[in-house]
Image 1: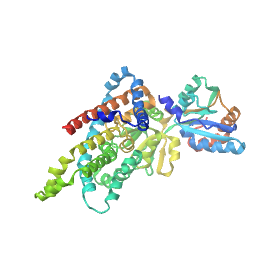
Image 2: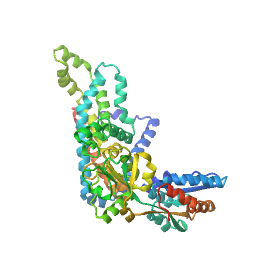
Image 3: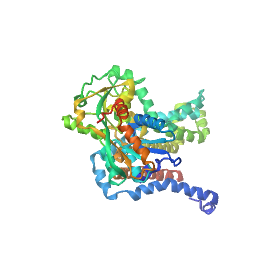
Image 4: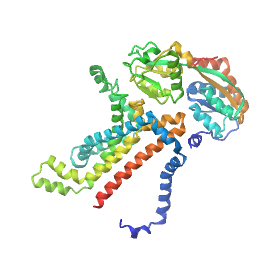
Length: 240
Length: 267
């Protein structure tokens, strides 16, 4: 039932035969939109369309038969779901990685210095709920660092956690480095060494039933090119 | 019920869309029941976190309803009976939460009661009191969203009630407060009950304002709707089981109270 619901809201409009459809993780929105415009500029007549959403929702849509050319989820598990269903042409390539960072309001009113501060009951702290990927990653780094976190709220997604920082309602939240970068001047990021214990890798792959396989390969090549890697790095991703 | 004469007389043009409406509203609930992993419901309910969420939901919805009664009934009286200026504007303002996206409500609550908010800022600086991420915040968020339902119901009841009883009481020497307590309140009691149940049900289902303003922490701020939403991210079967519990609680309450009113109204 859930799968049907999700499938119902996706799907590109049929039309020109020169349409490239990319299903990508929401965190790739800014970078991929820019790269898509670049590809359109290089190849007049090509229309690049994106569906940005949570990776698991996208994987579900693909499994339900949503027509797409490229899939770029935010972790290997969701790519594996699509690959195991036989929907992938060839092997996916990892193009980026995201790590957790501590987000604090501008000026750092809580004087947060590192991951250990998440054990401080005096601070107001947000993490992601363990049901969503950023929460699972947070659990991993806390476990690896031997820290018993004392959060005040477990947010439903990473952007919700970030919002609480932007509003100044929490002293710190654990979010992705790219989210800190995207948040602008209201938010400061504090990198911490334990983040290496939970690195999210972003694979990209061309789908087996891609209506526009050549354009799909061109897009993947662009993402993997020096320009693509630079764009990803500028957004706060680590690149291989 | 003495409606037998009318039963056969529903005009066909009404019957078909009405039947479609019933199917539209009830089928999703049927889907929930059909797809429910019945064998999992016992173990799901036994999970500590689910029990906590259910308890918190019931407690906070009840507190929000109590708060709405204390504040909302007087407000409804002002809207229905007083002659203050700008009443129409006031009515529009206090019913805005009915149509406001609850998430927006949550953000608005932050801007007033948050640590950096209009009232919350001084409260936090001088007294060290912080409202967000507490059970109090859950009750406040639910009250914000649910109270207009009560106000609208009670105001409607007051408008429908015969004001001559109140006039008579006044003529007999009762002051306004006595008239309100001894005449008006009993007169609109069924309307207040209806509004309270609607308010309670809305508070029980509140999601957007709660997750925004109160956050989500098991035992403190995680109510059932939040638990359902999060379960859906990782374990859809569990989400269905939890949804069913919430549906059962809501339905049982509505049915239970409905019987009580009908009994009273018929008597």
